[in-house]
Image (cartoon, rainbow, N blue to C red; front, top):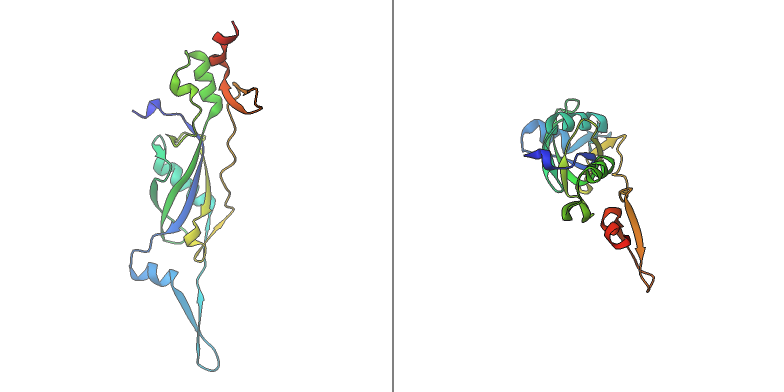
Length: 181
């Protein structure tokens, strides 16, 4: 059941085109020839421009209430360009405020205390998709208004513990309570 997964605040998406060999897709994304006065052909690549909001809306409707995992591929269609796009989940950020609230309401478990970088979570109503072009697709696809995944931050209930050799590590506040009492 996907109820046990944390809700995602942000999902990083890298987009590239799916070239399936059909004539319309191949022609739209291949080099276009222009004839000059000397009747020599000059090839210029055709740049396809897609708005990130269109891709984000499509992804949200396609994956709502589903669990997404880093490196998962999702295939969506662009209505403006009539292309099939392959969207790779490049990273996720969980909703730390909701997670911290659940931790305070229940006894802390090892999985809640681990603070590992999340690699999966559930797409919710407030999940935002940060869409950018994949490295291999930047010569053909241009993402308008694209943005990168914001830097993650530690939950609010984390304390930095500094050791005698001046190294530090994060610890969740409920785990330190037995040590202080």
